[in-house]
Structure formats: C-alpha cells, structure tokens
Length: 341
Image (tube, rainbow, N blue to C red; front, side, top):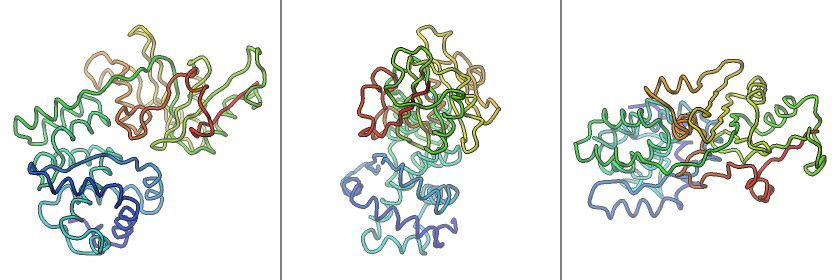
C-alpha cells in the first residue's frame, strides 16, 4: 500500500479536507449508511480553490497517489498518520466513506488515465460502499471522450447489467457552443499581461471608450475554473492568431481555440502549447475514428480540465456568448474585462 498513508503529506491532505468538507458531505455519509445496495451516496464537490492550494502544498502526484491508494484498497487502509488525522470526527467506517468520497472527487478532478481506470475498477469490483455504475458513467461522460469512457467501462469488469447501467449514463445534455472562444490555462496576472502583449500596438482603454470606432476590440474572461479562463471577444469571433500569441506567453501552459458554426464543416479546433499544436480537428477525428461534432470537441477539452464546458459542474456552465456575458455584473460574477483601441 502506498506510503502516502504513513506520511506527513497524507496527514496534511486528510486534515485539510476534513476541515473543509466535513459539514458539506455529512449528509452523503449518513445516506450511504442507510442504503441497502452497497453504493456510495455521491455528489461531486466544487473543489477549485481547495485543489489549487493543495497542488501547491503537496503536489498533484501526492493527491493522485492518495486517491489511487483508497480506490485500490481491498481491505482496511494501513494505520498511519493519514488515518490518525481523521480523528475524532471521522473514525472507523465513517472515515472510510469520507475517504471514498474524497478519492472519487480527486480522481475525477485529476482525470489521469490511471486514476480513471482505478475509479472504474473500484466501481466494478471494489469493496462496498463504492460508486454506483450510473454515477461512474455520469462522471466519465463529463471528463472523457465518449469512446474513451466506453472503453474504461467495458474493461472495468462489470457484470452485464451494471455495465449496461454505466454505459447508459454516458449521455449528457448538449451544450450550445455556437461561436468562437478561447480557453487559456494560466493565472490571472499572466492572462492580463498576455492579452496586453497580443493586442499590441493597441493600448488598453476604459470599457466604454471608443464607441463607434471600428478598430475597438473588447474581451471578457470568465472567472478561472479548473485552472482555465474562458475568453470571449465582442462579435464571438476571436481570431486564431490571438490564441497563437497567447500560447507563446511565458506562464501560459496551454491554449485552446474553438470555432463552432451552423454547418458541420465550420467546426475547428486548435490546442496549443507554445508554438506546437497538440490537438486539432483532424487529430480529434483520428481519436474518434470518424467525424467530430461540437460535443466531441467539448468532451476533448473537458478531458484537459476545461470545466467551463462541464454541464454537470456545481456552478453550472457560464455564459458562452458575448451578448449575454456583456450584460452581466462583472464584479459580482468575477469577470475580467478588456478594451483596446
């Protein structure tokens, strides 16, 4: 069993989430013990702020190691600092359910192939209480391409009836993705500096300055979610060149430019890392083994962590059209605004 359970990092992780989550998941723990089907009463938690902080303190590798250790456990977890940190609020079976809820959420958030395989295998063959097949299917649909989610379910070792339930849960509500937008994986300071640089020789101006000037360009960035910002431009048509310039900025990890039109042949995609294109429409079609739809593009971006395109996110999908977003209360919604002349 992983050493994370006997280390101070494991104790820190458990203590952190116990203090943040104990009240939020108390009802799920109680409901789990009243169930007769052996399933976990589950709901995914908006862990954005917690996740950023813990990634900085213990690192994503430790988070993944912990989640994998819990999901793979066939019996009791090993005694050590991590389990001791559960006391006195969450001991025994109550603590085990809490760690199951935490580990499912971590696997869903980190969404590495290894962790998602552990999650699927745990739902199929793990010790009770474990995630139900339908809950598993719903989570995989929100963080994987449909073909990858189906493969994970089919390889997990489910009985026929449970496999059918998991596969049936892969259907998601379709998102209205018409228009063009940019998703940027970075921090807010770097995003602002990057937009300023990409807009040169234009200068930043006040939001309402330059009315009627055809050269004016205005952009909005939704509040960061999952490490990514969704960037909209007036007219819903930010050019590919803007995404390419942003991708070259130091501190920007990844940029995705997505164009969705009324016709199928108007669909376009670029995922950029520096000057490299790591995924485009042709590459996505190769992974799918056929034509790609706008919903496939959204699924591919969700697999990279673009949570603004997750229809099941606790904070829902933000406004993806300029006209609606420009009418929101920017301060209340934590939207960053940019105007250039």
